Image 1 (cartoon, rainbow, N blue to C red):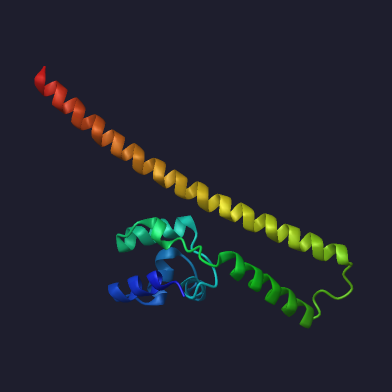
Image 2 (cartoon, one colour):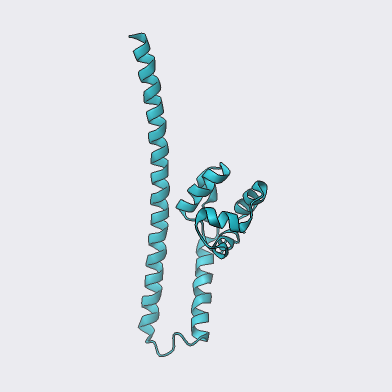
Length: 143
């Protein structure tokens, strides 16, 4: 369970539906985030940080992520097999499906990292602009 999401939501007195609306996702998707079935994206972390006034990095849940993803993938494949969705597929297709899934997960992780890096750069730029403005004001006052 992503305790931070749960505790922050309860502390604000908000419902799962209200947070889902803020994140522009379905309530069921938010429940998956809160129960650590899926991970918070960088964009969602930034939205949550603004809402709760907590550092965005705190919301990015990575503990046990690989194990959860592996279990999820295995459960999905088992479900597909039970439903007959994978019948008559050559074994090479299984490999291709897994490769596509791994590529998608890797790209999602890279996107999250890039989004968070962009946020950090924007914060740095904001601090530099503020520092520049203060220094400019200080030196113009002396002139």
